[in-house]
Image 1 (cartoon, protein in one colour):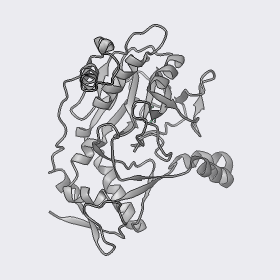
Image 2 (cartoon, protein in one colour):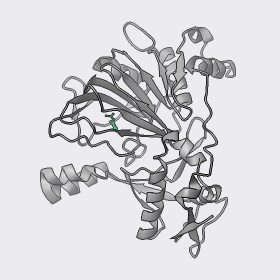
Image 3 (tube, helix red, strand yellow):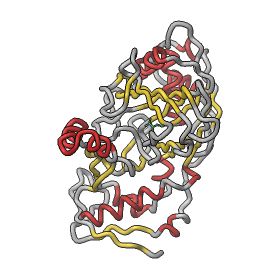
Image 4 (cartoon, protein in one colour):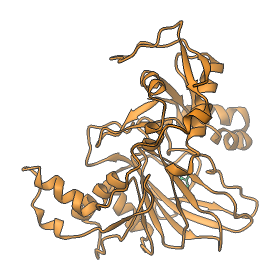
Length: 351
Ligand SMILES: O=C(O)CCC(=O)C(=O)O
């Protein structure tokens, strides 16, 4: 195997399984070699939220009674890597805890849930978000719905260029970042404007095992990335400084573990990860570029073609997404609710 070398300063890990010393290099397999490693965990999961929830409850003597397990949330898996289509439980007057339990279980299992023709108005989107967890502070840059502060309105078209055609998990410059997002298509172009999600668990499983061990010791800085441009254009240097101070920065492990399943995933994104702590600037840039490129393998993806009223909920822990910006000058309007904490995993950090 041919390797490209990265100079590495190393850092003290709390419980290193394999310590990187300051005089060692971190070795990157070249991309051709990388393709030889199978994505070992790309197994199709035929079960659905209902089955998973029933199993959890049966094995937990303290769980609420199983009556609600009679409710079903049948899911159809979309790709081996991630994603399933499902139907929202049709509950008049709100989202019950039991319905949210089912959705949560399915979300943990499939990472991305697609609900065609969901007809979720902004009020019910907020209810659904609240049934899953707490809703966060307002977004620093996007407009919000006139009646619902928690609903971000993403409108692109004409000369308004979409800003999400980059792989990212949402707002990882916050600590913790949101646990999940709920996105609804309000107005979509006749063609184009699809969104892709990638399983960062699958990206992790495809890494060279030696590199994976080295990455386990590393942490990286996340910040607001290209949101800088808007802040600077709007209010110059002062605006930029204020935006950076407001959004802040966060340090997260390069390999994070899902707080519910414990499954490891690659936790750096081209939108928001700026620097690997302990590396020199060139070594950090080389490592991050290498990791950013891995996400592009179609084997790791699911691609959603939107229709008005389609709703997608994704688990922000272990996935990244990319909104294809191929539809201008046509209009595309989406509503989004970000769920900050996972009610059903209260002690877990989101990374
Ligand atoms: O508009 C989309 O499809 C995705 C938007 C996005 O990237 C986000 O909500 O974080």
